[in-house]
Image (cartoon, rainbow, N blue to C red; front, top):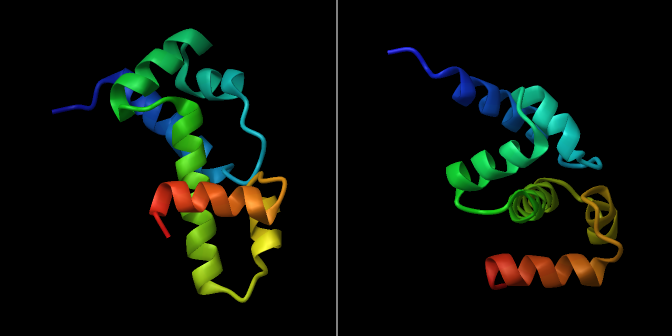
Amino acid sequence: METPAILQQLNGAMEYLEARLGDEIDLNDLARVACVAPDSFLRFFSYMTGMSLREYIRRRRVTRAAYELRATNAKVIDVAVRYGYDSADAFSRAFIRQHGI
């Protein structure tokens, strides 16, 4: 059975998103990759993932940062800034909220 076109387009947008987690992510770019309007993308995304785009990005960045901290000798502040946090404290709060530690 062939994957519906909208799912293929959303998968393409997810790949685009994952490749740019360390960058500023523009909703219009994601919607363009998915070939839908920004509002439609947000609705599809929320329906498919059960969370908002903003929440998904936050969780993925914290998770990616955790893997990077574990796998390298990078400083917490360097990783925090790479994933869009203004300070190590802001990153630590987000990390604790997500992982409980």
